[in-house]
Image (cartoon, rainbow, N blue to C red; front, top):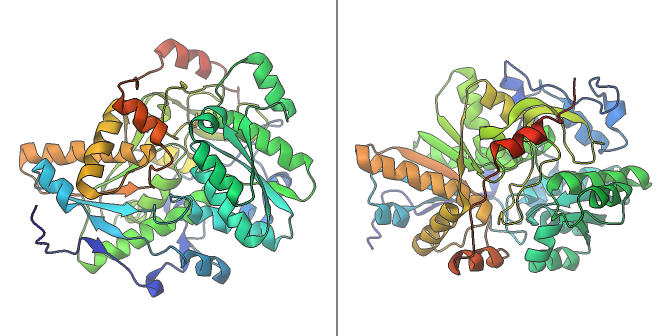
Length: 457
C-alpha cells in the first residue's frame, strides 16, 4: 500500500492544546431539553430533590443550560494529561481498500487502560465526589467500559466503587470484570439478590440476562440507602455529555490545524455520551448558524431507541425509582436480546440528543450486528486497531457513506468516533467468526407492548 500522505496519518495535539473548558451544548439550543421530573410528583426536579442521588457540583452542571463554557478543574486536567490529547487519525489504508474518494478520519479514544472514552467523565465525577468528602460511589455498566473507567478514577482519588454489571456482560466479559476488581471495585451481576429492586425484577423476569435499566435501579437504591455514597452515571445525563465535549473540542482543533471541514460526522449511540461529546462543538456551530454538518447517530437494530422509539417522558431505570426524562425510548422495561454483543443497551437516549434529533438537527440509522462485525474486521485489517463492538457501529456507517462517495465520485470528508478497543470483547468476535452470531430485531408488537407502559404525564 502507498504511504504518501499530504496530511499526517495521525494528527496529534500538544499537552497545551487539551481543552481547559468543557462546552455546554445546551446553552446554544433554542429548544432546551426538558428538565428531569420527579418519579413521584411528576414535577421538575430541583437541586434539593437531586441531592440524595448525585454529587452537589454535578447537580449544578446537570441543571445548567445557559453557561456555554465551564472551567475544567486543574486536578482533572492533570489526570487528562495521562492519556490526552487523543489522536485524530486519517484512515488512509481503509480509504485505499474501499477505493473511495472520501476522506475518512477517526478520533481514537481507546488509548487508556479503560479502553474507551468513558474515562473523560469518570475522572470528573470521581473528583467531585472526593471534593465533597464522600466515601464512595455506585454505578451500573453494560459492556463494562464505564465500570472499568470509574474503577480507575476511584482508585486514583481513593474512593470506594460499587459496580452493578448487566448480567449477560458480566458472564461474557470476565476480563473487563477483573480489570475493575484490579482497581478495587466490587462488581455484582445485575439483576441481583442484593437489592429489593433486583429481587423484584428477578421475581417478575426469572432468568433475565439484565439490562442497563435494571442495573441503574440497583445502583441508585444502594447509593440512596448508604451513608456517604452517591450515584454516578456513564451516559445519558447532561453532565456526562458536558465532560465528553473534550472529544469534539480536540477533534475540531486538530481539523482546524489543517483547514479541514467535515461533511459528515458519525457516532455510535447507546445513551449518547460518545456521540454527544464528539458532535458538541460542531453542533454548536450548526445551532448558531455558523456552519452546517450532516450528523448521523448509529444504533443497534436490537435496541433501536432513536429509530423505533417514542419521544416521551420515561423512567431512566427499570425499577422506576429514577427521575423521568423526556427522550426517545423503547420503554424502561425493554430488555435487549441476550445475543446483542456490544454495549449500547440502554432503553432510552440522552435528552439533549433526543431534542436535537426531534428538531431535525441530526439523523439516526440502525444497523444489524453481523454487518457491524464485518465492518469491524475490515477496519482492523486495514488500520491495525481492533475496535470495540460499540465503535464498530459507527465504522459500519462510515464505510457505507464512503462507498456511496465511490458511486457518486464525491470526495466528502467523514469523521467518526472510535470510542475504544475490543480486546475484552473476544467472545463476541468468536461468535461472529464461528457463525454463531445472529441478528435479533425486536418485533413491532414487542416494542409496542413496552411503550404502552410509559408513565402518564
